[in-house]
Each structure stands twice: as structure tokens, then as C-alpha cells.
Picture 1 (cartoon, one colour):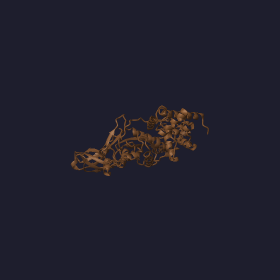
Picture 2 (cartoon, rainbow, N blue to C red; picture 1 turned 135 degrees about the vertical axis):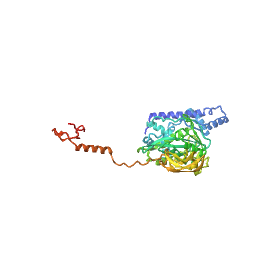
Picture 3 (cartoon, rainbow, N blue to C red; picture 1 turned 90 degrees about the horizontal axis):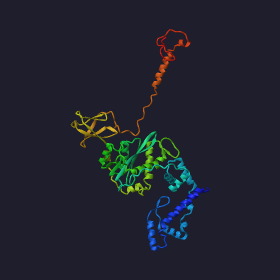
Picture 4 (cartoon, one colour; picture 1 turned 30 degrees about the vertical axis):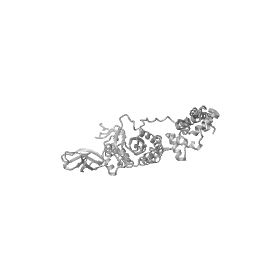
Amino acid sequence: MAVREDEQAARAERARAIGLFRYQLIREAADPELSMKARGRLVRAIAEREHTDPSGRRVRVSRDTLDRWIRAWRRGGFDALVPNPRQASPRLPAETIELALGLKRENPDRTAAQVRRILRSQLGWAPGERTLQRYFAEQGLIGPAAAVAAVFGRFEADRPNELWPGDALHGLQIAGRKTYLFAFLDDHSRLVAGHRWGYAEDTVRLAAALRPALASRGVPEGIYVDNGSAFVDAWLLRACAKLGIKLVHSAPGRPQGRGKIERFFRTVREQFLVEITGDREEPGRHYVADLLELNRLFTAWVETVYHRRTHSETGQPPLARWSAGAPFPLPTPAALAEAFLWEERRRVTKTATISLHGNTYQVDPTLAGQRVELVFDPFDLTQLEVRLAGKPVGLAIPHRIGRHAHPKARPETPAEPPKPTGIDYARLIDGAHQAQLARRVNYAALTGSTHVHVPGQLDLLTGEEVTR
């Protein structure tokens, strides 16, 4: 396939830019007035620094390469520093280009970085991200640039498990229902400490993400969240207090400090969500049938891809950087279970009873008039522990139970709808009415003959009783 003239011009321009870059690096060191000692000192200083190449990348150039460029410049001047235009734009195998273009065409939301990851997984190697972007641009496959998330500062925790930012991401729809991802990120390593996809952005789904994280990753010194309803619920404050975690909420309208988890959510959209669909089957996307499969696929992506790939900010894989601080003390099962119980306060009546969400319980008569704490599992309101000033004083005996779960403890999957009876009441009424009309037809009116009025006889056109 012949190379178009515009491609040749672009390659020549890139080659010239590379020559200028090389000349700028060596122009001082190539001065013939410099002594060998001074030139060596200057070249070493250049080799130790990072430089921005014509592609915008930060690179280092070895001393041997700098010496080679100086010798080339002395022999042939600036032209000797300009590479062959074909070397400036190495050509890829045609099948690799076609595969990359096919991946982009079947799923336009894929970025060049994502296509590169897929190629590397499939072929064992992949061209550079900028090379892919160039081919996509030539084929008109690059749309408007996506909005870049705001940067909220450069703070970083000094050690693993010092701070876990947490937030919720609005995801795709599965089986017609919107999904939400709760996630907690270790600020120092960018490791995903805990995560959970659910059908609601509520307290229960937040607990489902946080509790396994604490059990497997240890207890952080602090958790940093926003002011969403799930994050300001009293149960989270209680859980953190029980485990000795400092809970910090960002100031309204000032999200600084949550930039890392916002950037992680952007990665989730660009690398994970872009590859799946939950509404209908689409080319280039994996169809996810239910929430169980969504969580399984996400866990696989986090553990095999995200945790093991070198992070652009830290220069280390998140799992390796987090593990460098191990071992981390884990909470005991009893302490974890206690932390995730819910608690509400009630005053005991004169008859030694208490009420909780429509249920009535009998307690120790000596507690009459006292304000007590009720500690319970939100999914089972038949078992309540009574505490007075934090000390256990027995159980609340169910007296009348109308609700078995807390109003906020909605199950992930709603109850099956009742089976339809097949009875259409409106149609039954209409059928009865039509039958009544058929029995009272005014046949005399049909023939035009006069007839004595029969009480209750109905007119065929109006349906009203005939009066004459």
C-alpha cells in the first residue's frame, strides 16, 4: 500500500522535530572550546535529568547516546541528527493495525490505552498508545475529547492503611435496574481495599463493601467520604467508633482529597464498564445477566489487572505498594460483628415495654422509665439486645412483631411479585352489561311498529330507558 503524500510530510516533520530535540540537548556540550573534562561533566548532568521529547513524554538520554549525537553533529551538522523519516514512524504489521481498528470500531468508547491493553492480552505485545491514537485519527475514529476529571490536589498518605477515601459510582443498568458501586481506596498505594456493586446507593450496600474490606485488609486509621446520605448515616459513625477509625467528611462543595478515588472511577469507566453491557447484547461488549456476575467480573478485573499494573502516579503496582507495609492487624470476628450492628435509643414505658418500628417488646421491669440502647441486626428485628449506658441488661422479648427487618434494610433482590389471578374485573362488568342489553332489545323499534312501553326497556342507541 503506497504511502500518501500527507503521511510522508507528517513523517518528515516528526523527523525534523526529533533532530531539533537532539540538537537542543547537545548544543552546549558540543562546543569545541570545552575541555574533555568540562564536556564530560556537562554530558553527565544532561543524562541525569529528565527531558520532554517531541511526543510530550518525559524521557532520559544515556551518556553514550549523547556522545554519539555529538560525534554525528561534528561530522554532518544538524542533518546528521535528523533520523530517516521512515525510522521516525515505524510501520506496524497490517494485521495488528486492522485488529486495533476493529476493536475501536466495534466499541467506540474504548480509548487507545484500553485497545492497547486488549492487544497486549491477545497478542503478547502492543504498539504505543500514541501510535494507536494516530491510526484512529487517520480513520476518523476519535470523537470529542472526554472531559477530564478535576484534579483535587497532590496530597498522599505516608503509609498504607493510613487513609481510605470512599465514594459511590453510578453504573450501568442490569436487568432494567440501575447499579451503584461503593468502593474504598487506600490513599497511599491506590489499592482497592473494598468494593461492592448493588442496586441501591444506601447504607446496606455501603456496609457490604466496607465490612469485607476491614476483615481482609485491616483497619485503616481514617476514612474520608463525602456527605451523601449513606455516608452520614449513624451506623457508619458507630462502626468507625467501635473499631477506632477516624471518620472525616469533606466540606460541602469542596471535594479536595477525593481526587484519587474520582480518578479510579474514571479508570473503571474507561477500562471495565466500557467492555460490558447489561441492557442488551452488543458487539464488542460482554452481556452481564445479573448482579452476581457483575461483582464477579469486577473482582477479576481489580485483582488481575488493576492491582498488578504499574500505577502512573506511584510507579508501582497498587498491590505491591500496599503489601510493602504488611502485616496489618485484622479485627477479630467478634469485634467486626459488633461494629456492624445497628443501634437505636428508646425509653422504656411504665409497663416495661418498648416500641421499635411498629414492633413491641417486653424488657426487664427494673428498666421502666429508663432510656436504653437497642442493638440489633437490621435484617432480624426479632433479636434485640438491651443496653443501659453501654452495658448489656438482657434481651428484648418480642410481644407483637409486624416488621422483621429495619425499613432501611432492603434486600438486594426484591420479593417475587404475586402470581397473577387472570381475573379482569372491568371486562367482567362489561360482559355482564352487554348480556343485560341483549335480553332487553326493543324489537318493535327495529321494525318501526308501535308497541306498548315496557318498563325497564332500553334504547339500543343511547342505552337509556325508553319512556314512550
